[in-house]
Length: 487
Image 1 (tube, rainbow, N blue to C red):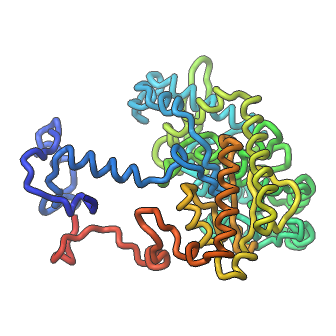
Image 2: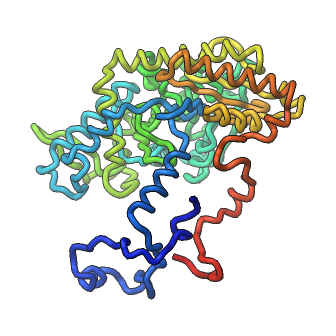
Image 3: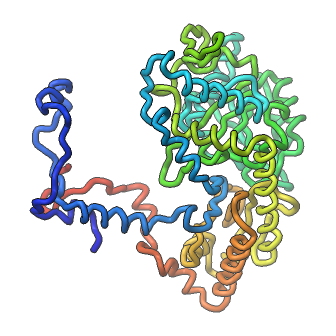
């Protein structure tokens, strides 16, 4: 049996709704009448067993890192230790309310304060805010601070420079903040084209946004000179921390010349982030930008911690409350457990795993940028495309081998791109299984291409019309015969 719960409605006497704990009239009186329903929702009547079976079946259809290999490039799908879930579930953390009086929440505030210090040390920044909800939100925060910084100097800067290999959120965030985006080319070695960059650096540039390692998995070897050139033009340098997993304990963005950094705790610091979150995107800054950090700021006064709200230069509040606390707690535990040596070992193993896979696969697939990579690499299915099979087909076929597809068609500058990030938590045995699967698919392209073109064959849902699903999403259940009805 399958389908939606709403389609399994039956007049079952075993179904019930939990008691509100308060008289219904008292609860409804607290809400404005214009937000109240005129009639009750058409909830299905089901037994507990029906509901348990439904959600258990759904969980068995899920693809997750706890069950299978998940080499999704630029996503850092590492294993998230279950001990961190236990820490986050401690009542003193999970049941505390954001409006709790400061004097009654000193333990939680201490965790937040120490986390800011940990991230400052790891990245080479002078201070941090934990408020942003995820990476793109962190970009917004950083760019707003950069704008405030330039305005404080009476400078009108209108452009943001972004490499053509960048994550799509970079230009989107810049545009959202009102900036014009100018693209920087990638050179033949896969690095920022320094000559192109210098030709576009002038008094109109507010900042240069970069990822290092970049999205090709390559370390930007000229980063010190790049940052120096940007600073000489009066621009700031922004670090997209999407690939920070490759640098932990090895080098720091602050030492490379970056002025603003955002991190993805849900990637680098072991917070589960499949199915959309929750994430956490803390932002760190050098001392010149500290006055512009979001309000309020957590400060230490004597033996205690409190929220400082008198911040005249602050960009203000970015969201309700003080960040995704459950995610922050998990990352705090991760950093405390590994320590400096453990974080460096994690980065080194991530780099080792990526280079091992790259070496094993370079004979079967094109690798456009040769040499050592960092924590991930990009290969191309251009050779396979000439035989009628594209990267998306290979990705779909991998699902039949019990392996999640890598990121495909990104970065955009690589034809039939397949971005692979194995992370540090995978064993050599798992990596070898992945290689064998891709080699088997490559043979199928020669011998039985229709098998690849028709994949996946073993999943609950095969190929869907992805364009229609993206542009005309049908996300609302309507009972048959009630086209205009809703729940």
